[in-house]
Amino acid sequence: MDDSEWKGREKIELEEYLERRSRLSNEASEFRCPDSCPRYGCKDPELRVPVTLMDLLLQSWTIKSKPSDIYQRSYKTGWSPRNETPWVGLLTVELKKPCGFLREEWCEVYPARPIGCAQFPEAWFLWPSENPPSLNRDRLPNYPCLKRSPPISRTRKKHLATLSEMAAQEQWLSDFFLFGFSPFYLDLRNLVEGLVQMGKHRSLVSDRIDPAVPHVIPYRLVEELLQVKLDRAGITGQILKKVASLDRVEGRASFFESKAVTDEMRKSRSCNDVFLFHRLEEDTLQSHLVARGEVCSREKVKVSIEGKDNGRQRKAKRAQVQRSSSGLLLQKSRQE
Image 1: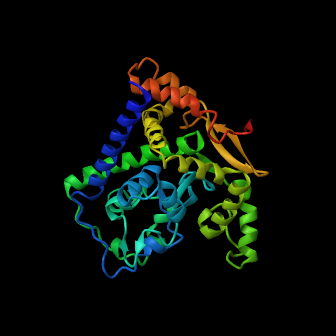
Image 2: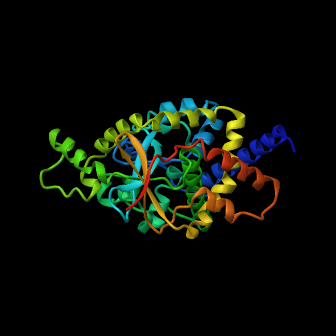
């Protein structure tokens, strides 16, 4: 199979995947945004909505716009803290607020809305222990959709479980494509003092706050400082360059080709020796080996799928090795 045939096959498989995901997002759902809701979730800047590059491609496919144009209009880089470790979280792509797809009170891409939006609020009621801190009920007191659960059929529950797994796989794929590593954890503990001082200077933070808790500092301050650091480190430019490659058929085919690799990465995460956090220090990106954990390196994944000898996986492994020099390479590592 030559390269043109391979890209054609990947294009078909990508479109089939996007069709299935759109169907699962909407099928058997009885939830509708209440007319009385002023669309808090679409407008509230403190409610972060992480998105994946599959979201971007599905929206591009639906409204016939280039991925790079949609990204510039509606997406931005962000940061999602982990429940377990304050000030350590995923470097993410997320929706700008108010959402760029909001047209008056309606979503321009509702059938192709981000996978996180497609699960909300049904998954919020089904699996409350898995909700991120930003979806704490106390932080969302005015949301009418959270007053009581909508009807959720058995079929819908199965779809939501499938969407949840797809979302996790897509996050790994997006991180790997953008940064060359999955998952891409960013440790902001070295920036906390600066954030607190910014907040106090602007009278946005109390003198008695506990800086160990991220949510006491307005997210817009975190976002502002993070964006400056990402720009100076050249990461913003790298992300935009990667996104622009999705405007081309071969770029989209290469992206989707990596899915076999990153899906295997999630399955193989127990094989890893170290847990990598990344920090922005002196305007460079640095990696820190902190503990045995759940981060999978490219080389371990390559070994784990050795022996599976069909054409797609050979292509995926070659693409994986080629990309190892084109991601955001870590400039320094040290054992903490």
